[in-house]
Image 1 (cartoon, rainbow, N blue to C red):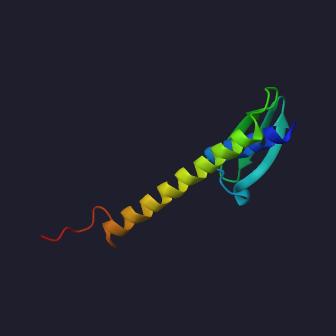
Image 2 (cartoon, rainbow, N blue to C red):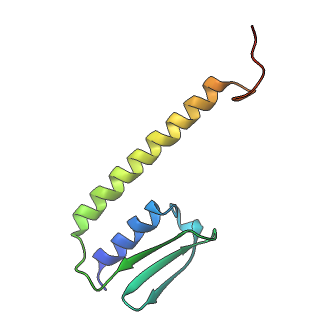
Length: 95
């Protein structure tokens, strides 16, 4: 297994919702798959190490794009919460 496979496993884990090292429960090999299991049940990602790894630069670019999309999503959600006010959606409507 090379660094490219490890980088791809990191990206696959991020895409599966395991976006922080503290959210990793375990990493293990099973056959030709490198598995990353999250601390939350059901969060897991597999990387096939029998296939040639993607060039590291490509994986880094994909990870950066994923991080940027996630940051934009978090910012948009925060903005929506602010616009909803303290009562949130479904709160009393003033007429």
